[in-house]
Length: 187
Image (cartoon, rainbow, N blue to C red; front, side, top):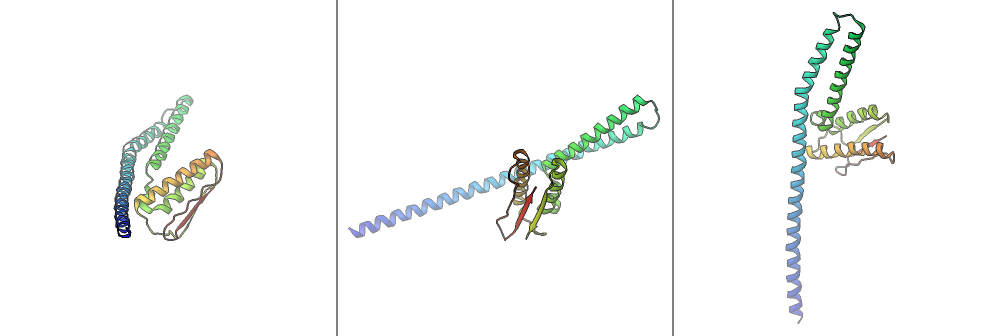
């Protein structure tokens, strides 16, 4: 009887190990697909950001330059006021476009890494929200994390700041759980 129990136990243990291995494989495949999805989304955001910048911003800059040149000859007050208003509108549109491009894919993230991108975002956030915001890094330095990790952390901080302004609750704090690196963002 004891031999049969032992055999049944061994068989059950073997099946449990097989199922655990299958679940591990399935979870790893799911994680790989999620990573690929994040990378694909960020590649698309990068493409859109470049396209918006390359096409629209150049046209607006030309438009602003043309309007500036028109300020000189006519001297009627009404014409000059309308022209100044058109210039201001075009400049605001250019600045808004720049903000949209930054939101889609911050160039500093690719060029200089997470810390520089977050410091830049915090500075801009302070300007947008009138809430002083600071990024402090401990252990990150010039070390680059994998691009998908940097992007994910950037998006988390971005959303945390947005939510902190929306809810006016506890200031956001983010901690990087690897290699003893720590980063705090607070308002």
